[in-house]
Length: 109
Image 1 (cartoon, rainbow, N blue to C red):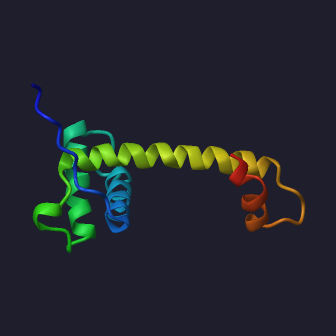
Image 2: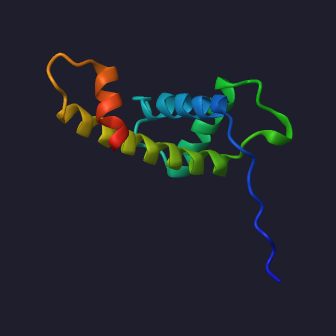
């Protein structure tokens, strides 16, 4: 019988925020830029992730592999959001505001 895969710890909104802040900080670092390996990049993001939320420790802390996987999910959702906003803004009626655009077009996406 194959061993059952173990599911990781659920992500909290504060962890998602810490991950995104870490990714932005490292990806926009012009001193290093693209001159780093994938492993080096994610290790640096992981370190920033831990710095951005020092309250995360103990058995519930996310692993290095978990943050890369989680960011992939967040990134996909951001692309979907951007596509929906682009489509909604293309239908923008003169005089309407962001709330109007979201309520009439974005939610149909």
